[in-house]
Image 1 (cartoon, rainbow, N blue to C red):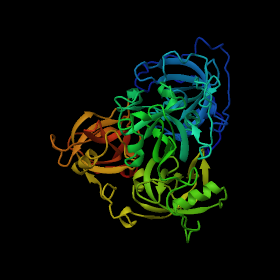
Image 2 (cartoon, rainbow, N blue to C red):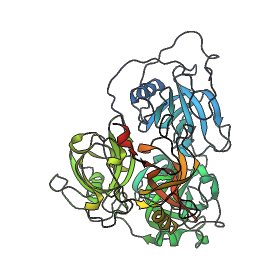
Image 3 (cartoon, rainbow, N blue to C red):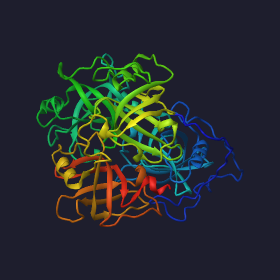
Image 4 (cartoon, rainbow, N blue to C red):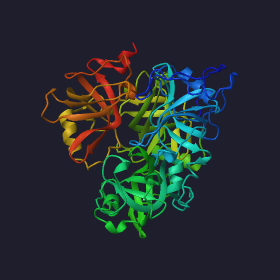
Amino acid sequence: MNKIFKSMMAMTIAAFTFTACEDVPEPYNNPYDSFNSGEEVTIDPAGSGTVEDPYNVAAALKLINELGADVNSDKIYVKGYISDLGKGIDATYLNAQFTIADDKNGTNSLLVYRSNYLNDQKFTSTDQLKAGDEVIMCGSVVNYKGDTPEFTTGTYIYSHNGTTSDSGNTSGDNGDGKGTIDSPYNVTAALAAGSGTGVFVKGYIVGSIDGKATTDAKFSAETATVSNILVAASADETDITKCMPVQLPTGDVRSSLNLVDNAGNYKKEVTLYGNIEKYFSVTGIKSVTYAILNGTEIGTKPESGNTPSGEAKGSGTQADPWNVAAAINAINSGTLPDEAFVKGIIVQLDKFNSTYGSITYWISDSKDGSTKLQVYSGLNLNKEQFTALENLAIGDEVVVAGKLKDYNGTPEFDKNNYLVSHSNGSNSGNTNTTGTLDNPLTASQAYDAVAAMEKGVTSEADYYVKGKISSIKFTFSAQYGTATFNISDDGATGGKEFIAYSCYYFGNQPWVEGNTQVQVGDEVIVCGKVVNYNGNTPEFASKKNYLVKLNSQTAASRRK
């Protein structure tokens, strides 16, 4: 999505001295000395940051400068050349750290930190990149500690020497399909799309992930798990970067598709209806409500791709707002007013942008979030800015006004939308408000609830959990930006302790030097997605949770 800049100013930046990130040595010598001819080269900012018109590095640096220190941008695309391989591709984690510039001489430079490869998949070998390669990067940028402009963790290479996510496969299979029931995406096309709500994907069941990461993939019907399957464009695929993990929700879909109970499904073709989104930290499929296997229909068949479940209601006006189902119908029809009003329940909070005072979140007609609409970079009532992510809570009922659109298969409110009404979840018609900001779960309640969940299945919704820190495995560090600690109802160990695993700081942002550190005995509220890891460890999912309150301190109080 394009970012609207507040000002335009010329900017020429040569090499930066990188001193941030865990494995960049200090001092970090200019990697371009051997390339420079002695003549100063000026390359002005260009591009709009979209996949069709990516920023050059100068434009990305300009954006980073405008954001200020430690503020993450929205997702952007940046084109450049690898001017220094740095640490290159890590053989253990199969991600890469390197530097890109506007030319091969290193004019303007931007660090790329822990990037994935094409399709946002892990690298498969340590020699896939070399200095001078042309790349288009996709991800968020930040001015780390105010002195290191970089792409943050979660970045991936969209294009490598002209090979893109669409054309990067070597199996002979090309991206195909439109994501509809009549023309479903194949897996290659679904990977290239990267996201989408209510789409059809066709592929072959080639295995499952019996663990916590894609490195635990099993390409057989043996040692499988009931909670997910892997699909690929080829029945014989064994390259995890060309596969999509599929979360199997409890019910007919899981019982009919999982390989533990249905070993004969291995290498069978299946058509799935659900959402393309992150699963196991890569592009996958979640919220599957319908499937076709061996000509047999499983679950509830939607009328068409992106067709919401539930009855469409409302007229889209302030007096009679659409519900989410009606809004998605309108988006699918292509006939949209300049401003629409939509009523829904908040089911997911993504991030707070402190520069613009906006929050990106999702609304649905029901608390389970089976059909949801993204509210991108939304403002508060009266078009005022939010002050923290905690200004909204899961379960709150809202009416949003703004322009609707289909963004690469995702129905959403475009930026500059705003709240017309906002009622707390306890007044929104939801009788069960436990796990909200106003009524968080206790650590023991969270432990019991998550212990009853299926092994390895991460919740769709976010939950708030309160307690006292009983033990700390890792304190916050600037190296990773997260902490891992246990909380219990009374701060004691040995009982029902709930784990905050790789927990981010206030506002779902990385911790930086100077921020308050956690200690045993601190009273906290943590918000995020939960998982029963390995079927015996109730916890917040890694890097999908963040601090809401630390003793008397909140994100809002820190800004006063």
